[in-house]
Length: 347
Ligand code: SF4
Image: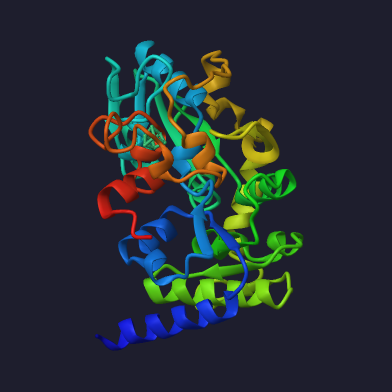
């Protein structure tokens, strides 16, 4: 056994001692945390009475069908659609972008989409701007740099704290605490989370960092405290990244927005401020988002609210695989179903 394995086992032993005689359910809201937890087999180290579930932490997974449908519609109208590869196979109502006949290009960044717009001034180029507080600053920086007029975006950014607040108000998932995403807190700091009367720990991303975060969280829950502890202090400052926050505040304002698996959550998304509305693809091309109901039997909605696990879905690994995904959680490398399918459940 390596030194790290011994340390992990010792920490897991501490968690078991602390949690003895209680049922504890923890939610994390980060695809990278799910990757680390599943790939490293962290659930197999934890006692059965400590359950860790993934919430709405995968940006592609929480993007509702209506926004995929809007993208498909724009592709069918002849616009060049630029998107991250993860979004390509997410099913919309009638098709995914992958199955749509159109000019759809995979890009690594929004800047690459702007380059395409500059290179093709006679075409309209639309970038699908998905992501949480981690990617919103890049979108803001690009819009502040005066991109060409034939460039626009579907603003699909979503904010983590309002979704956490909604989950706590519903009480549906019986959560005792949250493991917070280190990268989101690197941008936004910790103050937004201090408003929540629930145990929370900000954790880094390697296996020991995640396990240590879980240890601190279980300790906090057992001791009856409800504060924000920062176990990722090497990257997260209490105030966050003020420069990134300033750019976001210049370009965006909060708006009510629907998430996959959730209703419209107040102030949980971004819209462009009036001076940047010319870059809003939905306004520019008169596209309306339609509320659509999922009828495939996919449990992504429940998964994202922490009330089901991937293997609860009868389609998991049968009708739904990464090559033929039925739901968004099997598409993205940050989706719980895709991660469990690739690395095994391990609990
Ligand atoms: Fe949806 Fe597929 Fe996951 Fe089932 S296995 S919840 S169908 S993504």
